[in-house]
Image (tube, rainbow, N blue to C red; front, side, top):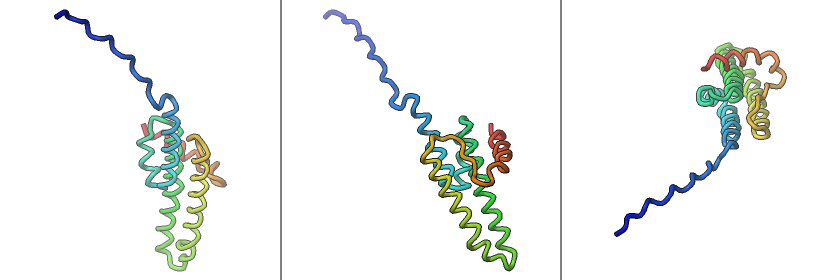
Amino acid sequence: MSQMPPPPPSPQPAPVGGTGAVGTNKKTYTILAYVLTWIGGLIFLFVGKDDPDVKWNSANSLIIFGGLTILNIIFSFIPGLNLITLWLIPLIGLGFWIFFLVKSIQGNGERIPAPGIGSFLNQYVDQLANAVK
């Protein structure tokens, strides 16, 4: 028997996602950060820590929805504020939730400032996003 050399290695297939996969993950992480409210913000603040836009959107979600949750808890202990805790704060939260969900589905993972209060909150969102390394 003659010895035959091994066949040359076949070329490696190109990655399926290519560079578009990063953008897809960025958009998915942004959507999930807002869909899951402050819990999603907390999770994706650390999961998406390599992408500054994902960190920013996660910090935004955490501050807005976490703040509304804390306000709801505080107001629930004050007698006479049942209207605020039962209707107003959840309605505001639902409005923000729908806004962020629509914007994150339409976008590509870019930063989505909160309507009305974004100019006030952006400095705190930046601080929180920059604090996670």
